[in-house]
Every structure is written in C-alpha cells, then in structure tokens.
Amino acid sequence: MYKQRKQTASYVLMLIIVVFFIYFLLDLTSLHVIEATEADAQTKGTKRDMGPFYWTVGIVGGCIAITLSYVSWRKYKGEAKKHTKKDPNS
Image (cartoon, rainbow, N blue to C red):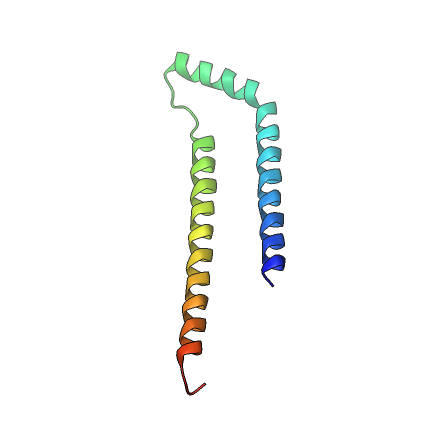
C-alpha cells in the first residue's frame, strides 16, 4: 500500500515538473514580445502587465493549499485509525 502511494506521488510530482517546463518553454517564446511591450510601457508611462505575477502567485498558492489539504487529510485519517485501535469495543 505504501509503495503504491509513493509511486503515485512520484507520478504527480513528475507531471507537475513537466507542466512547469512546458509553461516556461511556451512563455520564453513570447519573451521578446513582453520585453518590447515593457519598453513601450516605460516610455509611454503606462502600467505594466501583472499577468505573470498573478500566474506565479496562483501556482505557488495552489501548491501550498493542495499540500496542506493532503497533510491535514492524512493526519485526520491517522488520528481516526489510532482512536479505532484504542477503542476496546471495536
């Protein structure tokens, strides 16, 4: 059972890494456009695009939320199992 969970966790981690690499590769192709837009924005005095910042905050916040949810769920299941083993009426 532990081996299967470990294998599933490694697959999920590899999937996340692949998605990040694909995202950054696609993002690098539009790097020249972003640099030109930022240069134009600085010359014209307009606001810069905050899109990449929001993506980063969303991805990091999502990973933290998923990790905390998983850890909380595992702790809940562990506590429930511990209380079940201590109950002499079971």
